[in-house]
Structures are given as C-alpha cells and as structure tokens.
Length: 175
Image (cartoon, rainbow, N blue to C red; front, side, top):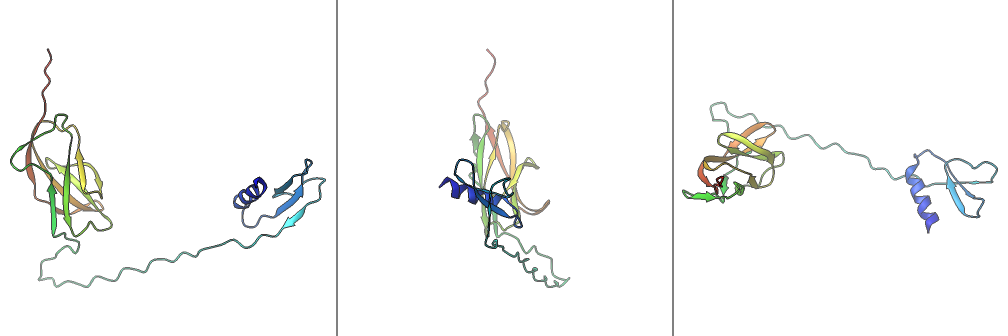
C-alpha cells in the first residue's frame, strides 16, 4: 500500500515529460524514481497521458441598447427596496458597549459585483460586504445617522433613506 501511495505521489510531483523508473532497492523493496539508479537494473514505466481541460472564455456581454436622450437615464441595477432594518424608530438604542447590528432589506437580491456599504454620520463605515447584516462596534453614545449604499466598484449606485437614532451607553465614572 505504501508503495502504491509513493508511486501516486511521485507521479503527481513530476512534470508531464518526465520518465519514471521502477527498480528493486538493496532491501528488496520496489522503488520508483525519475532518474535511473546507478548499478541497478531498472525498467521504464509507461504512463498514460495526463488529463487536460481546455478553458473557454465567457461570451461577451450583449451590447446595451442606446437610450433615448430625452428620457431620464435610470440605473439598470436599481433596487426596488433598499432600507435598513432592526433600527429603533424614534426610540433610543441601548447598547452598553456601543456594539449592535442592523439589517438590510434589499429587493431584488444583491447583484453580482455589487456590495453594501454602511454610512455612519455621512461617512463610509467598515468594509463593503455582500452580507445583509452590518455590525457597528463601540459606537459613541448620542445622536447618529445611518444609511446603506449599494456600491459597484468604487461608485455608489443607490442609497437608502437615512435614519436617525440615539445610542445609549452605560457611563462608568471614576470613583
């Protein structure tokens, strides 16, 4: 069993044009090598051709028809629903360590190549992601505004309505 495993490993480790030699070593064990051993008779091993797979380039995307210039240009990837969820409406959010998660309602599903970016107080927060749950960590107490953007590359293609919330945290004073 060890000999066949050694042969398999050897076959995968060698380039496709290498020659394999089979011989019996000084201890009487069958051995395989990519070089003929000195002073020992060896036979060559004929290997079957290696499998190969040809890659096929994807078909180019169909051209986008020209739009009538008199019509307002709409983004073909616009989402019918893009909103933050799990955010208190008018109430304060109690997060003792300032860490909490918000959800994103999006319809239709997030398209390939699009990412979600959380916007906190008018600035990008965290890394863009394709997961519709966004975490805020150690947010300061007080008033904040949140929104979510859909990014295509570095460009924002759509943004949700901005929601305001108040974060309450436990204040620990020094004794």
